[in-house]
Length: 198
Image 1 (cartoon, rainbow, N blue to C red):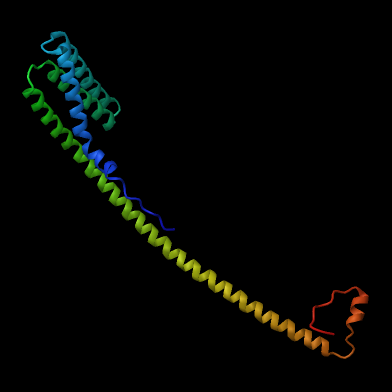
Image 2 (tube, one colour; image 1 turned 135 degrees about the horizontal axis):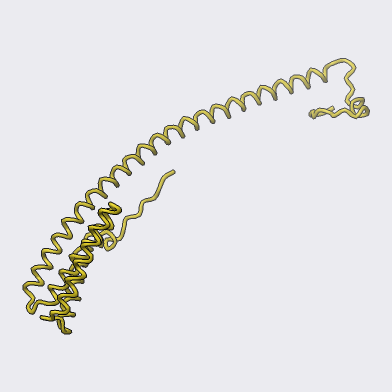
């Protein structure tokens, strides 16, 4: 009836808010490692990343037209942007351009995530409100049924007490009748009603 609520650990609560920064930082770090291992001013690597980025963007367009699944489209365009960012960060020789792209990508990621967070928060609040209203409604019905069941039990107990009193009065009345012989009842095989003493 009563649910216990468990407060999430602060790391679990903060992780979704840090995810966009972690994602763009990971791409920047991997691109700079790639840069240090030969991607700097490599025309072939730049062409490869451009082709991959355009392929991911094309997949997003096709997925949007074919299925209309916003999650799939968003994932495809996010992959396209990440590949383009990694290509530029890997190709550039200094840190200023990759850091500028990292800040723009992080701000864009937070801008897109904030929209989904607001939608998710609205849905969560609406669900909690509906659950609370439903709980109150069922609590009211439960109280009414408890009162009804208690009344039925009390009526049954009262009826049982009245029956017991009537049975006791009948036994007393039967014992007072002339010619009442409990032994004759036993000999005849009839069940004997319980009584205090003979």
